[in-house]
Length: 147
Image 1: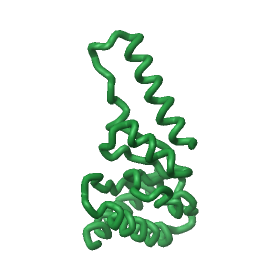
Image 2: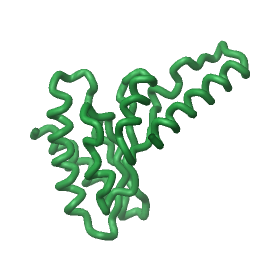
Image 3: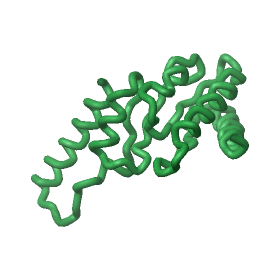
Image 4: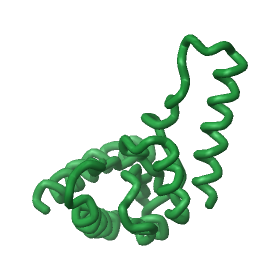
């Protein structure tokens, strides 16, 4: 609990500097997908995020970039929070098919799969194969984002 709170507090402090510069910060407290108590860590993270979001002035907004949760719609309160512009999902290291399946179970969250996006892509592919693969990948992430 102390570590999670410390990370969230640190990210919100930096976020305030970014807001002061006229930009919208992306707060990204990633949870490791392989930990045994991932669901408990997500509960702690949610509580901390909500405390910090509630403390933001009405003219300060953020984006959140969060690891796909164990419990569908775990972060619904963040999605609907007045200080949150958008919640974006990290693939977190899940294979793209697993990440898409998890994303589709989380309303209002869109995919940002920097690790999962290049799966199946190779410099050795010809243009046609590369374009077909990237198109299929993007279509899958988009479909999961609007589910």
